[in-house]
Amino acid sequence: MGKKSGPNPTDRSKRGVKRSLLTEAHGLPIGLAIAGAHRHDSQLVRATLESIPIRRPKPTRKKPQHLYVDKAYFGDPVLEILKEFRYTAHVPPRGVEAQELKRRTRHKVRRWVVERTHSWMNRFRRMVIRWEKKPENYFALLHLVCALISYRAAGLLG
Image (cartoon, rainbow, N blue to C red; front, side):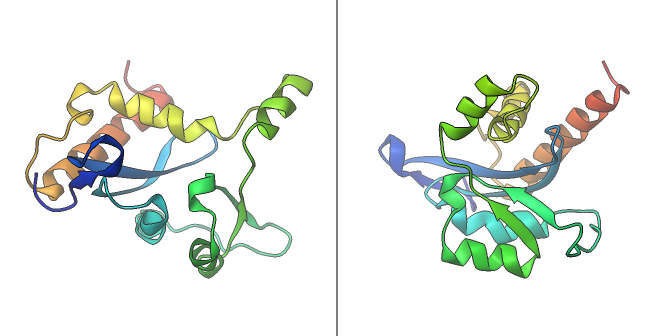
């Protein structure tokens, strides 16, 4: 499989790739990083944040920039990286958001936004299994998929 691919500990050391994805509130992809499946999610935080192609506005005290992360990203090294990038980290515990959703029907659950975007990416069947030997080729295809998802969301493509 090449670089940025490796044994996955959850399925008896089969080779695989891990995608780390950063989205905005509606699920449009903003940042993307890949690594071997054997790497922990927290090791991809810096690469994912550095992959954002647009310059973001500087966070201020009145307008901080919030980042909702999964529990796998919670820990001192990750929090230090998020502080370095000047994000306010939020790690909602499981179940709390589901209960909040039942109480307030108009409230959207933030936890599932990234998983929905991964599902959109997997609809491009080529992305489900990595066949490319070079990570650059697979990464380029992922960027193409992200562009197509963004165009579809903007109503430019069907």
